[in-house]
Image 1 (tube, rainbow over the protein chains, first blue to last red):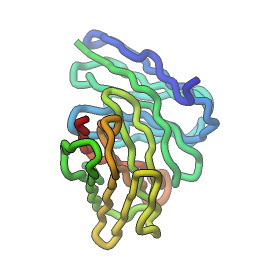
Image 2 (tube, rainbow over the protein chains, first blue to last red; image 1 turned 30 degrees about the vertical axis):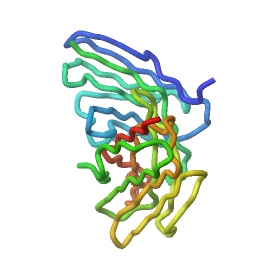
Image 3 (spheres, chains in turn brown, red; image 1 turned 90 degrees about the horizontal axis):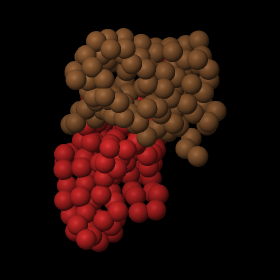
Length: 113
Length: 115
């Protein structure tokens, strides 16, 4: 079984709809991250969480919100989806040291029409 | 803004040749990491080099780090068709507080290895 899972894997939604992307991990890591990937732009950090009570904005948090329901679960919400939020979204985890590798989920391909 | 800038953006080689990708960055780092991404899939960690290290090996991978030039290179030796993927460098922030350990990714190098 995968260590980091994301649901859904693909989603098409309409402008203005609220959508939630979910991430679960079995690695026992404290830190969790949400990134978006657009062609030619690499990955950009949306939000990150060091533990259940510690959530921080990344470089592109506008239009997004997150919830850390438990150590193993970190959800990303788009309150009112817009077409330029069409992208590939990745969840990742790492240990508490801040000096180690990150482990990525398989991604969610989101299309906003 | 992107901390890591990668060069070249795309690289096409024949099987058996070596592939070299370069990464430059702007600020002080804790470590630098390289990741691989097969088309449309999640990133997979390849290798991590700490700021006090100059070279590191893992199988057919060799990574160098020059902190004075703020640059790193990834060498894949004896490439295979299965190495075809995008490769990203990511720098780990050395800043304090909640920024410590944050990764900033470059835009990636697309490597194509022809059989």
